[in-house]
Each structure stands twice: as structure tokens, then as C-alpha cells.
Length: 172
Image (cartoon, rainbow, N blue to C red; front, side, top):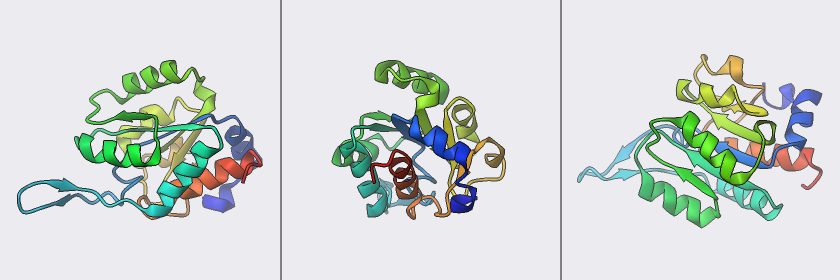
């Protein structure tokens, strides 16, 4: 997939997007978990993904993270730095959190893009206007994705998506 799957359908869907949501581990990060000797969790983020999110916001759009893992302080720190609007960490019900965000953002399902990498993301990918899988997503996710990035999670996949969205809207 990737640029080779940049079809007219993907571009039409991308033009409608107002809200970009994503999983964290495996999308904004490479999916590996880092722990210090004292048991403190750490995450590594890609600066280019961050720049893409900032450009998305500068164009007047919003973004957020829905994560099943508990790293709220780390996610809040990164999301605040980037100006992200929605952070749901340790989500036990991604579908409910997703609906709460949509209600708050006042957007329709077809105005949302969601980037996922694993089976916990399928329920959201089924609902959105532009479901996206990162290049190294598990195979179970791929049938639900309309677009698959060329970049792996944590290695510029989010930047690839923000560039695609902004180009589709002829902003970038």
C-alpha cells in the first residue's frame, strides 16, 4: 500500500477529514516498551511525526490519542507539547472514548481519520471515514485500512498521514 495505494477514494476521504485520531504504541512509537531500573516507563517519539501534527493544527484541524496502555503522564506531556486536543490513556473502552471525542469535537464519523496498528484498533477503524494502518501493523488490521503507510509506527507514519491529509486538502 502506501503511496501506491493513494487512490482517488483515499483522496476524496482525506479531503473530508477534520479530526485525526491515533493509537500511541505502535503508531506514535515503534511499539517497544522501555523501562528504567526503577520501573518507570519511557517512550520514544519521532520528531517528524510531531512536526506533522503541529502542521495539521496550524491548518486549523484537531488531533488526539486513544491508548489502551497506562502512560498518561508521558502522553499528556507529548500531547501538550504538540497542542493535541484529546488524550485518552488506559482506555478500557476505545469505542466509548471515541464517541465521547466525536461528540465534543462535533464531527461526523466520515470527518475522522484513525491510525492504528493492532487488533484493539479495529473497532475504531470500522467507524471512521479514513481508516489507516501503519506499515508494520498486524495482518488482522489490514482488511480494515483504506490506506497503509510506507513508514513504520514510530518512524514517520504519522507525518506521512498528516502530509497526505494536507496535500489532499491542497494546504501543503
